[in-house]
Image 1 (tube, rainbow, N blue to C red):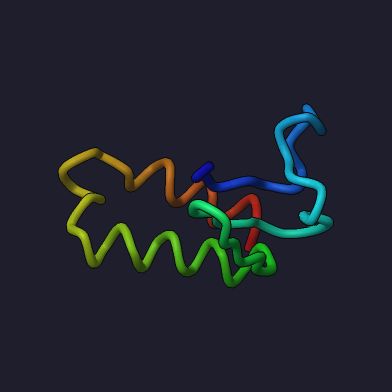
Image 2: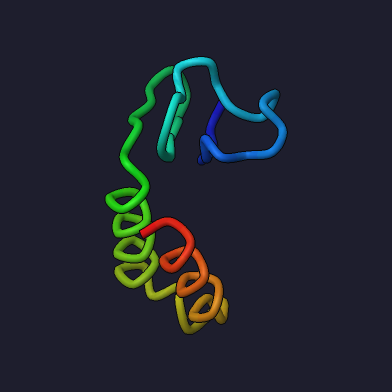
Length: 70
């Protein structure tokens, strides 16, 4: 499986057992869990590097993510 999981998800069925607090990035059988602040910084950096922010109009969404979890 692949995905991004947030420990504050209202539906506990949507979070993997290993995720206690923070955001987890999962790809196949590997995963990494980061504190909220670090994970949000990583997501914003990745979007900027991939030039996805402008193309997908992510400015507002990324700002909301930053305010909520940073």
